[in-house]
Amino acid sequence: MPEVLKAALTVEFPFTRSLGPVQSAFLTGLRERVVLGVRTGDGRTLVPPVEYDPVTAEEIRDLVEVAPTGTVTTWAWNHRPRRGQPLDTPFAWVLVRLDGADTALLHALDAPGPDAVHTGMRVRVRWAGTREGAITDIACFEPYDGGPVQPTGHSGEFADAITGIVAPARLDYTYSPGRAQSAYIHALAERRTVGERCPSCRKVYVPPRGACPTCGVATSEQVEVGPRGTVTTYCIVNIKAKNLDIEVPYVYAHIALDGADLALHGRIGGIPYDQVRMGLRVEAVWTEGARYPDHYRPTGEPDADYDAYKELL
Image (cartoon, rainbow, N blue to C red):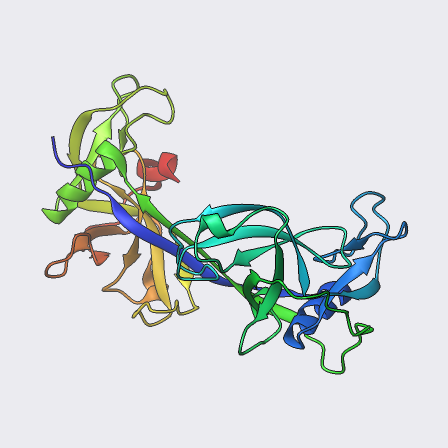
């Protein structure tokens, strides 16, 4: 049985969002070393601020400054910081109720070890050296044994308020294609295309899924298909993809390989994009060292009759 493959993958993109008046003031305040909360109708001060009272759902915009000092309400020690976390040495995640606030703010506490952290300890904000209007403008919290720090009474009004942020979103994970698709990928490395046949309906699925999507039964019988096939449908791509060295326009198509009962997708080359058509007979083109076909090109055969592939559309 061939080795089941696995690979480390990353999905990453920048997420851009606009800020309402409350979040705009909060983040702009951090840039100016001011911590702002919002006061509810019953007099509570929420930090970080929200635009709607979580109890009454009423809109709230009454900004109020709180102190950069506070009290740890609960904590957890982080023995092994990960990429993108506030500190690159072990630290404590803490909920801090800043002086003047009625709710707690989650952030990092720089402490020498878990024995130096306890609920009720006093801490203060350590500001980042360079601030740009983000929660990271608070570099972390640090232990504090000084007297109370009084807010300056800032109104929350700023001449050059931040109106939007770009937050990077990233997911790192390990993907395994499983037994069926591992066998499919191993076969591609040998320039063969292998599917699996359902023992019930006898359909051959390429790429194989390990189970028949129609009958719901496991599949294990391998069937080699192709190497030629038929274009069932296609689209013309006019927008160039980032980091993809293919000039537009080009054609991406669903291709039913001979012997398969499911169309796979691939790029069509070797023919002007405006001459690609349904029923076009094609074959795989491989490049040296590649683990999958680079594209599919016309074979020169007559077009397939529509009835021969209509069930695969």
